[in-house]
Length: 158
Image (cartoon, rainbow, N blue to C red; front, side, top):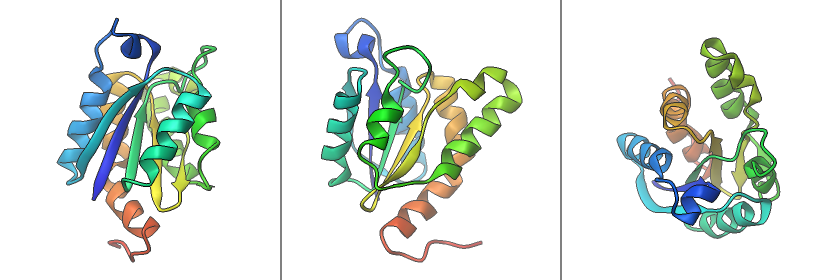
């Protein structure tokens, strides 16, 4: 199964910060058995997010985004994602929020969404490397099953 990582960050895109969250996401995906076909950085914004998700959804089974899920004016990853998905998969994002809230009350400020564009699953994660690692701890075990189901398979029940 193939995956892509999209880091949404004005500062990383401008070259003034390093993409550590994307590297954490790529490593977690590889640990799950995914082949990371592409890792890309885009600026914050609805159009930049929607454009890269539209392009990648035809090429991979899973896209994980990092960043742009908070409350600052440029945090528009959920809006860009919603503009391209066909169906939401609320449980994935709800599980990550619930887990985070149990440790840090600020977890309730995450606006990340998850959903399907065709048979490609798209999952928004926060921008901090720690939050990405914790997100994979929560949803990693179901990603392979979800991707299999989205592509018409029967998944691994158990």
